[in-house]
Image (cartoon, rainbow, N blue to C red; front, side, top):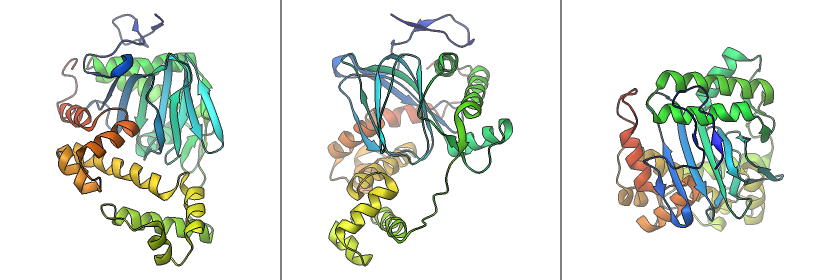
Length: 308
């Protein structure tokens, strides 16, 4: 089994595919832990092994940065598919629609960071000369040393070592921004189609629990259904119904983090029942809503309290 250096966090090397004590076991040897460490504000973490699981098209409020520690991950973007193998780093900017799946029969194991836009912006201001909103100009890079640092961030957080985890996080993000960073283009709507898509998105956000049909939505916005479909997919990388499912899961995450029960959350965001929430949430987030809520409750404990 391949080994991953802890990045100087102490304790020696650990098997890169070994699940943490609180990882959620899944069928077929899959496991996942999606969590938050109080010593790293503005960051979510995911460490997982997936074989059959495939992430549907979705996007994130913040950034996605992961290192593949075994197998191959295949990421689908609007302009094509990229693949990352052992040691490869994947970097995805906010609101970029993408899919993810195994690119080899054995699946893939990876350690992922989900830093907020504010966290990345602060690091970019302090360590780079990038102007505007900083982002990444490429999706996959071969950065073995930085990959070991990302694995080290996970190990340090799991050990309750806030100083090491925060230090490694900032060094790794600064290194990636300096080597692969650039200003993101403005997202302000510039065309009539983009403005229509933005209005449609606002309507779906406001009426998430009881959304209009595509024909009703198009009529309200004084356009045609196919014109709306084209404009929305061009602006957000997915059709309105796919975007709505993703938006419901995002809102469900916030409600679960606030302590709402999964059954109550399902109704609040517009899913028919809890099984529908479970299915869509697990597909998009990678863990079931109950496990997600449990990890968020554990994250309320003070940092530095030792391993979970």
